[in-house]
Image (tube, rainbow, N blue to C red):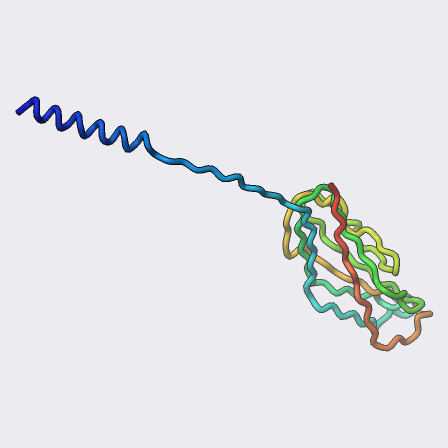
Length: 161
């Protein structure tokens, strides 16, 4: 009986070994790539109305805060520029101030014009949301009365390397 059990056990081990030895494998090559990603978004509905001045001084500047901007880039040394499509009326200056994400540099309150200006530089491989964005409107007395008007501010992210 012992010999019969040993033979049966031996046959079972041999059968398992044969099944293991006949296992099949397959391979597949996976191709992947990550392209340059440079995205910017802004939120808010800024409105600026100058309606006061101290006697003997220029009209009081006004600021619209509470706006935000967000950025995603997988490149190094990206920058944000800003511009408006047409000049401001004589005597008026529209400026923007973007809070820089970690590791980047804001140019602070920067006057906007038809030529793009840097507002944030040195943005490197990050995603950041709800960063501060404010606008300021300055006027001289020579601006006179200016009816309600708008300017579309265009923000552009330019990738680095």
